Image 1 (cartoon, rainbow, N blue to C red):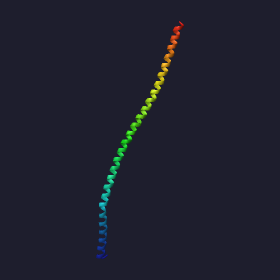
Image 2: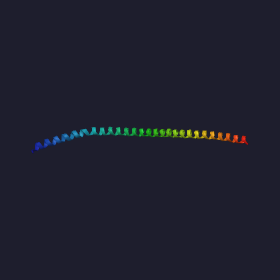
Image 3: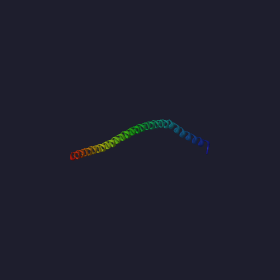
Length: 100
């Protein structure tokens, strides 16, 4: 290889390196943009997590209220039964007193 061929080869390689170096600022800009997008996505994910947790609490509250309503309905039915039985016993006592 002659000296001129070597110089041409070195110049060609230098030209390639210069083109690569010119692309570096674009890569840095793209990296900054990607970083901003990722931060925005992370922030949005945190907001959605908070909303999801709030919905879970609301759902749990509605389920609790539903369970309490069911228990109150059962208690109401039990109270109605007890009142009816007490009235029947009262009638039986009155009838027994009348028989004497």
